[in-house]
Length: 216
Length: 270
Image (cartoon, chains in turn green, brown):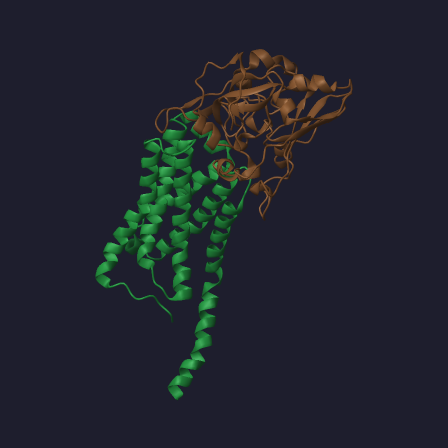
């Protein structure tokens, strides 16, 4: 199986921290631009949308880890927790920006939005569903919950789908960008339905060759 | 954009004008792309001259108006609030003339009840009109009831901030109806037709439950996907400036125009 040059083990930990630092850069940079009046037009909306789109990107990245390992034999499992938590932090920042900077804490308007606007209801549902995943993203929870942890974390499929839908429903005309995110989530979730069959098929496909090699 | 002379009109909103840079770089003009920055970025090759506007339909004297002729109408500067259906707003010093002045020249017939407008179609100059993804059907169309069209607040604009219209703002001539949501202000107009029946309107066709024919600014009638009770004033307050303000009925022009809709249920005719 093909694979990238392996990262030395001593760099595994630091590479995860590097991912956190890189991951927060778009938010920090966007906040800096907005706070110093460098975001054009509707600065708050620009920042809000930047946070939302990065949340969706990190969600998609977490979903990509398994197919990348299945298809290319590259194991980036060690980064999945960081990617998932980054998605969670971006969703929270997205919501906080909406609440504080955009709606200026007009609570009745916020509650009405969440209750009445389907795209906001769906986005809010995704946020709420992310909370138990973030809370159980530590080793202790993984040990403690065992198989139930895996089941619980399958919620991410629902969350990613809700996120992509929230994005598509928030715009006046669904365009190529929204289609792309919907497509990526659909493909990555659909992979889960076929991956076991695919892996079995590949094992069987390569098995005779191995036995031949042994025979030779 | 060249300098443009205009007399000062008495229609001057008290609110401070939006910075010119915001009004000319934050635009919805899907013919140049769906992003707010796309119109400014993608409209450099658009040629707003020469230009003619065809005025026809139920009129006694159908004819075409050349750009020079349009610029020869007595031009006024009017500072209007502009409220987008997306819940943001600006304050813009337009230069233009009442649409009624143009309509008078073509002598509308008694049977004319509505005015239909059409934007130019030039895929080779307007990237949003070409390619695989077409956000809307072209030409962009809008319409007004004749009494709305003849209202003194309704203008055809040929400039802003003391200059001719930049391409991204609808050069060389566009509609401005300050008590309606911004999408009614059709840009780069090539045709004005008087009709007996309500004309088709682009956004209304794209989402009849979201964008009504009237599209009067109304804080009491929410867009299905967002509240219209408040608005974000662009270019004010920045990031932490609490630039959210209450939206006014008819965008603050109720005194002038509310009577046009007497007896109508505005939550049905939104």
